[in-house]
Length: 507
Ligand SMILES: Nc1ncnc2c1ncn2[C@@H]1O[C@H](COP(=O)(O)OP(=O)(O)OP(=O)(O)O)[C@@H](O)[C@H]1O
Ligand SMILES: [Mg+2]
Image (tube, rainbow, N blue to C red; front, side, top):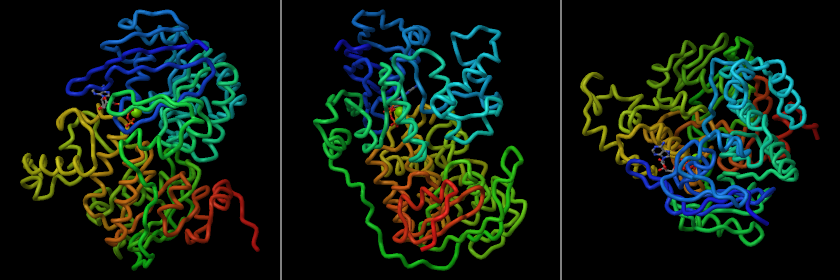
């Protein structure tokens, strides 16, 4: 079969980085082709070249066997050839509605769009592919999972020949991922090629036909999924053996650190998000919180970290009543936070790495004189240490953090939040988007914090992760905790049922 697209000898440089080094990559009609590699390997850059968002420096590009002018390949050309991309960082305007975003982002839609027609298409696609969304909702009101649905609809507005999905499942629940796989398979059956970027090997094995591995900008190999296994792939990606099992120390919890008693809070839309919720996280434990996104997780994390006021109830951290919480108070009580929306909340995109690392604690004596004059040398040394410890790949310590690859940006925030030995840590899917090696590292770091006595609230939709690292698991549903069990007493099926509002029949 002739490839629909063929990229040959692609080289792409950024100041200080050789992002792609002589890479070959092709996609057959109707195949699901996985693109794997460590954080910073070049996956997003390669697909950005194909989608016309980035210009290549050297290399050739053919569509259906015909060479095109690769150096002049643009986003409009890509669109005309039916190449669509769902970006890793959503490209949505927060203040606009879903409908406006879809209409405005689309190069083929005229300046004065026919909103009614687009509205209907959104609804039809929503039904056909189970991507339900309110076209009139503003983007800022949506959960991360919902924002992704908008991106998928945006890409499906056209006849798509090649659909590039950059880590589409990183933000989905297992159930949502399964639904997405149905869509992906359906599209592939209809003849669309899918380029599927993921760090999750099991899903790659379950849906993909071929796999291409990149490492440090180089093409390491392309294999049929039937000719390989997870172990071999992990080794191709990282260049060493990887163990994805966390060794947990015995569970001997201390006194409560985070105590919420009957807490209520409103969402951004001013609707009830937390409904008299009570939860206790003890010293030396990882409390996993399972739930479908949009059931109050975001608000809960924000209440504990002082970013959102509670409207009712009592909150105690380390024995101190901080019902009237603020971010400063939460930091003072040693509450760390790995936020959901890392780019929006976790970093200032234009800052370099050193300032990003001390964003929250620059007032401390070791980093500044009275919070006014920064001790640059101390900050840089501290940053260098974290870069090394967390294996963060950067083109230069001072280059803006927005230029980091998705996973490396995550590592900046995680490094900052867990290197300070917080007494309480609210971690919202902390391994999302991380490669296998980094996932191993973050899980081990959480475990280390736990042994050191931290109380960790781990919010995630990845049930396998929750089961692997938590001591206890609670389920949040419509702003309430509907169940708490010891991890050893629960399983994926029971949690899945509770997450969707089902009750476990008493036995
Ligand atoms: N616009 C840019 N300017 C400078 N450097 C960039 C830019 N975009 C990407 N890079 C660099 O190119 C390299 C490859 O990045 P890329 O985003 O392709 O990684 P990735 O494989 O998608 O990783 P991840 O799994 O973390 O998303 C990284 O070193 C990154 O910092
Ligand atoms: Mg990427």
